[in-house]
Length: 296
Image: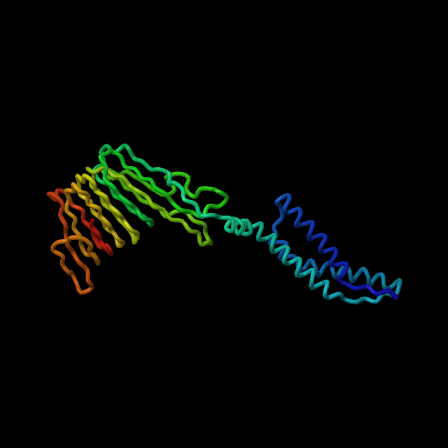
């Protein structure tokens, strides 16, 4: 009397069909692994049912003892489910993304330069300084320019920022030029590190208003010929220079560093106001609501 272990044939057939499906899905990029994964368990039951029917029919002609190979059934079910799950991850791009993260390296690259040379009719510039440190200098040139470097987890050697429009937005409205620094692009669902350090050059004769966040801002107002206003909750450093001709006023700030005069405590929380003058104090830089203002 022959003994047939139900499950052995099913395991072989399931492995064969699963291998063919995975091979074809990789070569020809077709088939939805998620659908196959959901259909996997019914498929196993179908194969097992066919196998049992076949050998029950054969048992009528010859004596065949049927035993169930549960180890084979469990093994092929687990192996097939894992294989289809890997195929689904590959189709979704998660495996490729994980590989890119492992191969990523930190690089320092140049920010694409932004320049606005046509300032005819522009008397005022409003700058939203964004989320990374910024150094601002006044210049005798009649153009606005922005440049610097950024650090990024480079994947496959590709640069994170390819043109200036990806990190800066500039619009002209009437007599005002609006400049907004954008947050650097980043990978979703990944702790993607990127940071920048930029320098902004602004004509000394333009009125400027800065809107900052909690990041550090450094100002070098050489030959200032108009008023600047700085509104930020971060740290502000102003480098006066040897031939400075300006007045710096601090309103409602927490810390003042430098030779300030007429420092006044506004309230019990330690918020202060004060001013410093250089030369004749022709033009004024006003700093509002900063955490600290340091003047060299």
